[in-house]
Image (cartoon, rainbow, N blue to C red; front, side):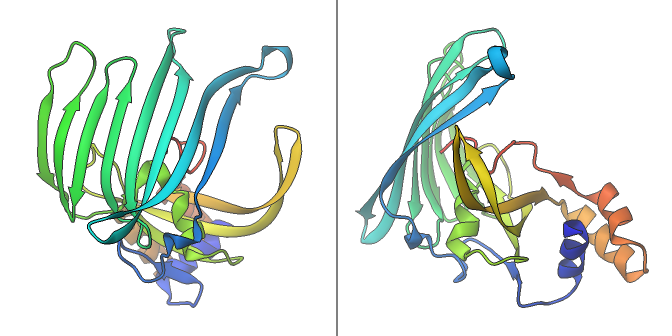
Length: 247
């Protein structure tokens, strides 16, 4: 039912469908106050339950060249496939209102690192694949800037929750030549168990939709084909497991 509502929203202008770009007046990140939070993800059940990854997010608000900015510092660890523990630190700077990215710096215990400065659509800096790899200079222009994919969960709340609301937003990551389209559907509120504590929270479903799939869905609907049939071929749920993987 939610997919059908999404497809109809994509082909019609409704008050609950919001199309976003970086800089959109619909986005106001000032809803986020300075805070610290911990995120833990587990695998397995019962006695076999094991901590897969853990990280902490710390948000401070500052000033950069007269602009109010959000500075996120994330430190975490993750269990690699070979059993090793990889530790990493991620520093990100966004415009406090628009959530436009200004800088992304990451380092990890396995030697992976990058330091990117984002000025509009231009990305400059350095990167290194691992501890044995050379440091490479980065300087490229993206076709379409997006909100940072690893912090995409910031976007829906910065727009505002309303049951049934559909948001279309571009998402971008440091190794992407251009942004990719993501759709967020606000399903409503639901009880969530967070390590034994029940919390009533907003539930948002992210869906990846490629431009070609979007055109195909719209054409299918206009031909009178069922939305459910169209959605099976043209949409897929996010494979990240959650909206935010690192921040």
